[in-house]
Amino acid sequence: MWTPANSRIGANNLKKAIDSADGYRPQPNLNAEGYFGKITKIGGDYVKKSIDLRRKNQNSNLEKVFMNEIRVGSMAGMFPRIYAWRIKKQQGKPYSAEYIMDDFRIAPPGFKVVLMRKFLEMKYGDTCPAASEPIYARLKEAILKFWKTSKGYHGDLHVGNMAVMYNTEDKSVKKVIIFDYGSHRRFKTSTNSETCFEKFIQIIDKEFSNSIKGVKQRYHPQGTQILAAVPKNNQAYRSNTSMLRGLRLTQQSKIINKNFSTSMMAGIHPENKPPKTPKPSNTPKLVRKPNELLVKYKKEYSRKSNIAILEELIKAFSNFNYNRNKATGQLNFPNMSKENYRAMVHNLSTLLKEKQRRRR
Image (cartoon, rainbow, N blue to C red; front, side):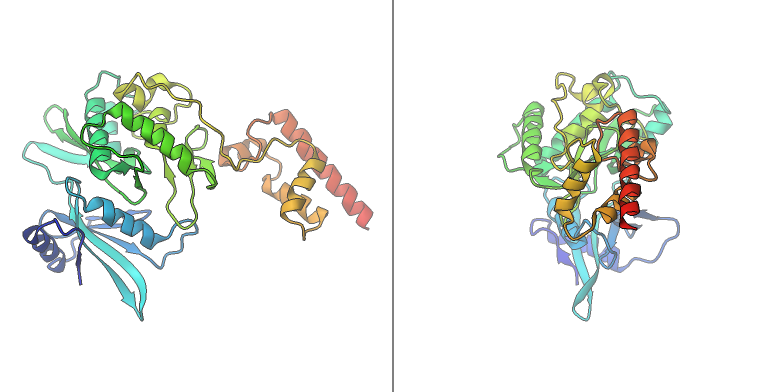
């Protein structure tokens, strides 16, 4: 049984959407698998997204993510819009969730819609569009509309969650489409149709900074200063403004680090310089001496012996490889030089051998 996603959708629109799903017959080569669900083309102008709720995910409550998408996608003015949803159960336990939404790939004659990543590759190759390129203006329009309509910000805004409608003759951009609402964050600050882009930036910077206090954090992508909050039992999320300041507009959304002049933000709102980014609050302090490491981890793992802790520390450092630790984000001490890191690991190894010798 389908549930209307919003009482304001209208009976006619609701019926068309549900009929398209119920009359669906499998069609080859029209499925798209994503991390948080599978998109299937159904009848008319609609697609269906399905989520397997039995799939284990250590960080996210998939049902909570699904209902967040329903909340945002069913709002008037959102596109693609969600029309109806349902959760399937077996023996009283939910095992699958799905909803019907607009197929944003449908375009008027002379136009085509593709994922942002594909459009960037097709038009610009590996190069970053110049700030004068019209795509930045269309991107700014889409983001501003999203903030105003959804009363919040997209928690995972990148080129994989956007699409472009373009003119097939000259490849000019008609509009940018934002989708995938599961990580949406609701504004606590009051906003309206008159709120300007700069004000939204200030709101997002402040609210994101407040929301991550006491929450597990990490830099994502690695090598950037873009913080991701990883709350327990919910989808991880990042600040739209940090993403715009920290990544280039390319098909791979390449890292720019401190080079703000080539960032997405520089193309859509160049006055907005990046503020100083705080370090994750749960990043361990710089510790060089092995005894300090033992003291630190002994407090956290009081039941383990010193030898057991040393063995696990060494194992965590991937066979003492500094570059591998840094590349995979396992390095606990990001400000430590390679020389100091090697010295610390050598001392750890020496200390372990000493303790093992004494134990014998």
